[in-house]
Amino acid sequence: MRKSAIAVEAAADLVPDGARVMIGGFLGVGSPDRLIDALVARGARALTIIGNDTAYPTVGVGRLIEAGCVARVEVSHIGTNPTTQRLMSAGAIEVELIPQGTLAERIRAGGSGLGGVLTPTGVGTVVAQSKQMIEIDGASFLIEKPLRADFALLRAHEADYYGNLTYRLTAANFNPVMAFAADCVIAEPDEIVPVGVIPPDAVRTPGVLVTHIVSRAR
Amino acid sequence: MDAKEIIARRVALELRDGMLVNLGIGLPTLVARFIPRGMSVAMQSENGLIGFSAPPPDGMENRDLIDAGGGLIMSLPGAASFDSATSFALIRGGHVDMAVLGALQVDAAGRLASWMVPGKFTPGMGGAMDLVAGAKRVIIAMQHVAKSEPKIVDTLTLPPTAARRVSLIVTELAVIEPTDEGLALRERAPGVSVADIVACTGARLIVPKVTPEMPLCRD
Image (cartoon, rainbow over all chains, first blue to last red; front, side, top):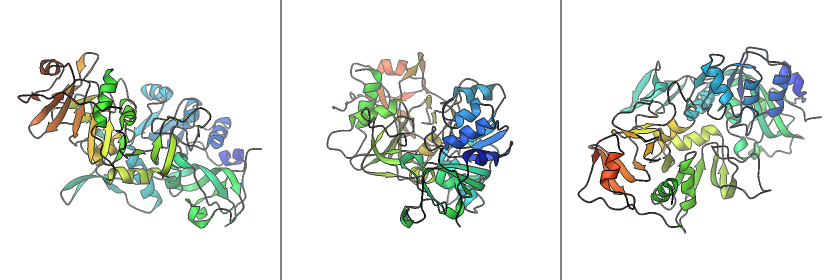
């Protein structure tokens, strides 16, 4: 159960080129900034990033885009990052746009052993193209498949050495659902506290889901 | 009073005590300034918060506290924070009483296009498709024309945001309600004639014998 914290560079080395990587955050808030910087520093390439958005060119996931680390993104929004839009137009990056609630539920399904979700979101739009529709009690739903990744890179507020995590305010966003949906889950907390300091009711991600904790900045 | 303020003041009159409301990015955000005094309305931001006001005074910023447009906000006493799956369960599950959204186009069937202009502009849908699919009422707050082209059109030429018919369209010229019969003109802005409105609208309007003047929320 007990984990030792690893250096951020060592954590970035675990993520190979070409990996599918979920990254928490909403316009950079709640993104693991040190892990992102370490991936940029090691020159990661051809990553597929799954997250809410690509933030801004100098913020969060935007830094990976700017550094040429990313081949594909699966996100709900790229409107705040002109670089993503330019690379998409030039064919240098693949972009799959997914409605935000559908993205959250697909990740939740992927992490909780469900075969997918039925959602009314996207019915009658381009999102429904090449997807199965199903009628339940007279209402139409899209069948949306689960999403999983090789890695989830999370930003937490506190972690203890069992990997139990807490989050702050709007920095939680996609982090708690992503903790369930990847083979290797790496958490970058603001603080590491002794086991027992986080009360059980305050734990939002149970430590068993977390593979590695990133040690504090030196 | 400029166009945006007219729209925000009129939309604010749709608020009711005790509502949970989601205001979209841009013009809809202005509605929060005109919540009638004494009315208690809870605001949801889809990135995971109910109960906020914006923006914080200098020195009180919290980098972990933003709205869905990335603007810094303050949480109010009694606020609740939650993850994105919970936030969209609130939205899709019909727990949001009213969503106020901007639009690029609305058509005669009351369908909304708001998330891309093919070949020109692809910001993505963000949470808009979920909000339109799930909120109890969807109110469109937008300027009546864009670059002298009507935004209210017969049939959408841009990709729709949802199949659903929106509840109400509020512009600086008029209040229009999409109905089974078509777009019904409900109100005209102060100093604006019905003929002005018809001239700026790209779809047929059902015009009543008398079109009342739009009331505007006071501060």
